[in-house]
Amino acid sequence: MSFDYRARDNMGKNHHGTIAAEDREQATAMLARDERHVVELCESDNDSALSLFSRRVKKSDIVYVANQLAVMVDTGISLSGALQGIYEQTDNPRLRSMLIDLRNRVEGGEDLSVALGRYPACFDRTFVSLIKASERTGTLGAMLERVANHLRGQLDTQSRVRAAMAYPLIMVVLAVGTTVFLLAYILPKFLPLFKTKGLRLPRPTMIMMALSDALTSYWPAWLAALMMLVATCYFGRRTLTGRKFLDGLWIHLPILGPAYRKVVISRCISTLGAMLHAGVSLLESIELCAEIANNYHFEQAWLQVRDQVIQGNRVAESLRASKLFPRTLVQMINAGEETAKLDLVLNKVAQYYDREVETSLKAATSVIEPIMISVMGLIVGAIGLGIMLPIFSLSRAAGH
Image (cartoon, rainbow, N blue to C red; front, side):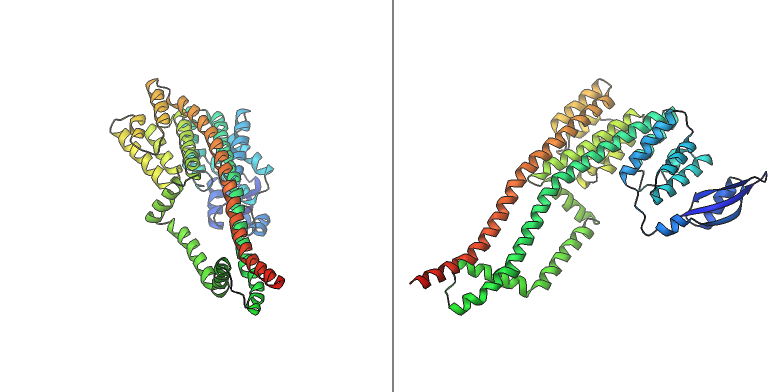
């Protein structure tokens, strides 16, 4: 929550502004820590009015914050001043609340990495670890720019994946919607005509009629089954068994599986290279790769790599034992370890996999599009055939 305050310091000077806190007690304590005695404290009008409708903090907002911080810190502006400047430029209430809290904590002597760690939903462990490493080496501005570029690359990959998946999903929705419309609305209008004429219906028409009857008569059961399927996928993802199954399914999908594996590998390798370049330890970097993989099988593979490295093995040797990582990737990492330039090699490998992701997504889309069009054509054609065959029979009977 955001609170507007008026306070007086030990010298009797008046201060006013906005402070972010969980409640009034915490806001009072934070001001007291800064030796400011509260005169008036009330919930911010903007915060109370927009709390129900405020936008969430998106990853693009975090990229913007990191990029602006990098520019301001490099130009000599203090960290608290930079946070205040960004706060004044944004209109997202939640982001403003977070920025003012970060500013207050930094002014109170807290390290930026520690303050960022209080918002894990916005700043993941990778972000916090990179900032923490830069604080030790005095390269905060350069690291913020690097982090912004790293996050921007992840956003670009996500947008490419969404764009590649949009067309197949639209085609699936259209295919299902068209099928339901024809079976539940169009076909039943022809049934009275066929029955009054006493025609012997062809087998395709009888099959279509049976499907139409099942859809219209038992639609609550179909709806319940759909809801159960969605609930099973949603809650099953939260169980170990369900996560194993669903993540394994994604990996082994016939067309999208290879592209999905490259997306995960690209994300992990890019993070590993950024962490090592910043001076983060190898073990911690590998653990973060397991955390951001967002796939059970890749996560376990990285944890096994960590265990092997603890025993004294090299990263390339450890990766070679897993079937999830291509041999070419293992060879390139091995070359990086032999030349003691692993971070540089990983950055180049990440760029290579970024290009591979784009190529794989285009290839998958080019294969899926004709398949979906063919499937939709077969469905509509089959239903149309079931309707037209009896009409042709009526026409022949009328001609005789």
